[in-house]
Image 1 (cartoon, chains in turn blue, red, orange):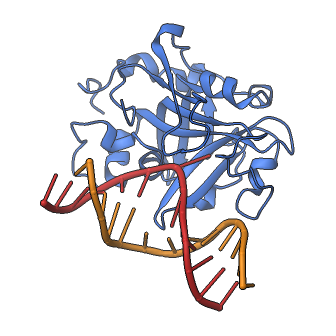
Image 2 (cartoon, protein in one colour):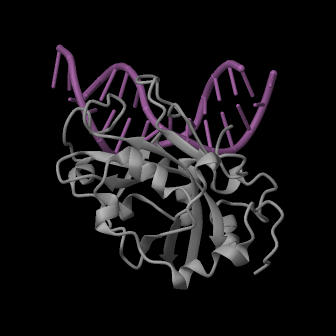
Length: 217
DNA sequence: CGACCGATTGACT
DNA sequence: GTCAATCGGTCGG
């Protein structure tokens, strides 16, 4: 694979070794408050094995959906068939289907019954960028990185995450999270969550400043 | 059951 | 900037 892709903000040679040197995020990591988990997920590696291929990306944009009292959360009106996974202990993948065609992936956080999660909104490709390109329907990686893995549904399509992955343990072989290089505090920006009309005062979207894969500026 | 709608995206003015 | 696609989840009758 080409090691020097102009649009990448960090040299791949600096991130790839994480696959063998870094540790999976622990149940303790996931059991904390969704806002804390969201911020701490920035810089971590999302690793996906599918069809014999390794795909991975550095998380660059997330949104927190704390369960209690958040009218924007899928868990706000209680447990249903769709959101049942949100009420399990932190550390599972919650995938939902929306707009009749898209999937979005969340990391369940907190304790059993809490109903909290973190939406994964964008990753920066680290391994398997060609496979992601194919999955997204491009012949070649687009010049604008956002078209590849920027946006919750694009991220899912690039990594092959579908409803079938709903409920999976995030420490498994198929999909897991690795501790990454923690970004400096000054490199993180917060803003209101995208597409949410209620609770606009809560700045629960976090992203890495100036990263070319972040979905919106 | 029927109606409404969405944590989005891509195509288009 | 605008807007349609497309369909499972959810809720009201």
